[in-house]
Every structure is written in C-alpha cells, then in structure tokens.
Length: 262
Image 1 (cartoon, helix red, strand yellow):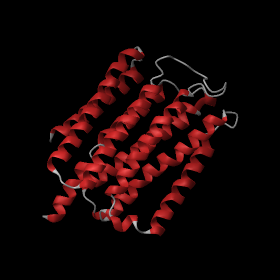
Image 2 (cartoon, helix red, strand yellow):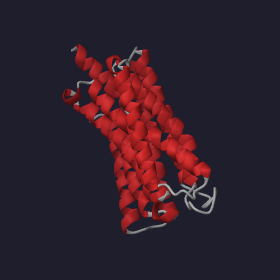
Image 3 (cartoon, rainbow, N blue to C red):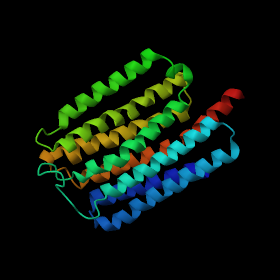
Image 4 (tube, one colour):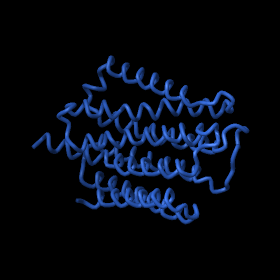
C-alpha cells in the first residue's frame, strides 16, 4: 500500500471516528472540528503530493491537467466546508423557513469545485464515449430528470428564491457527477473495467449521495429545521470517503494506461 492510499485511508478513518463520536457521545462541536480539519488537511496534502508525483513522473499533458483539476476541486470544496462549519453560528440568513441556509452559500464554492471534478472525469473518459452524442445526450437528460425528481421530493415552496434556485441547480450538477461514474466504467470496458476504476466510480457516487443527504435531511428536512446534528456526521463520512477516493483519479489514469501498454 503506497503512501497516497495510506493518507486517504487515514483521513477516512478519522472521519469515521468523528461521526461515531458525534452520534454516540455528542461531544462539543469545536472538539470534533479539530479532527475534521485534520481530515481535510490530510486530503489536501495528499492531493498536492499526487499532483507533484504526476508532474515528476509523467509527460502526458492530459494527466497533468486532470491532477490539477482534482486538486483545484478539493481546494474549492474545502472552502465550502469552512462555510458549512458555520463558525459564526448564523441561521435563517435568507429567510425564516430554512434554518441551515448557510449551507446554500457553500454551494458557491462546491459548485465550481465539483465542476472541476466533472471536467477531470471527462478528460479521463475515453474519447469514444465522449464523442458519442447519443450517450452524452442520454447522460445529461438522465441527470436532469433525476435531479428534478429528487428536488421535487424534498423542496419547501415557501423557502427563499435564492435557496430554491441554487439548491436545484446544484442538485443537477451533483447528480451529473454521480452519473459520471457510469460513463467512467463504460469507457474502461464496462463489466471488464479494472477494480481501481470501479472504486473511483464509487467515490463519485458517494459525492452525490453526501449532497443528497444534505438536501433531504439538513436543508429541507424536518420542515426546514433539519435533522441536526445527526445528519452532519453521517454526511461527513460519505463526503470524506468520496474525496479520499476521487483525488486518486490521475494516478488511476496513469496506472491503467501503463497496464494497457504492457
């Protein structure tokens, strides 16, 4: 097991410990915040290390671009995490319906962050999948239908327009990220895809699942009050595991290219 996998595993284990402590013993939030920041710091260090490794040992501009996109994605998402920590303890910022609407502000960071990740995925996906207009059309249509159905099942009409517009738009984006897992696996041979590609796809699905939990149970759940703090810790596990996986996208790309040549 190389150092990059070990660091990702460590960040995920810390997230599991934080979630278990938060759900079972409910210690002070600031105590757990230290461990949450530790997970994020480990992931950022790991992502930068992976990017440096790719730049040092690979000549492919496409792989280097994917590495930079993944690190940029993580940086933006970490900024979103800082907003989600709600250190100033502000609630009902955009109206009197959604208590935890500071989460909506974090979309301003998470949306560009996951856009970069989606871009990285499309650089990895083989050209034959990207050039098939019918497949791409079906992909975006499915993302639109799933996100609309998901949003319709949870939204509160009385919420502020700002909240409704941003959460639906983000719902479409994060659904597209989750569904990119299918294109990724398909581009590497579908059922014959390497295990590393399947794991990467799981990371993309976890990213979508983590944000679905936020929308359903933290923003719009419990009549706008949210099932807090329980959902915060459950979401954190899926989110950190997802980030721990997807930062390895450039390494998996290199590894599978080498295996194909050999």
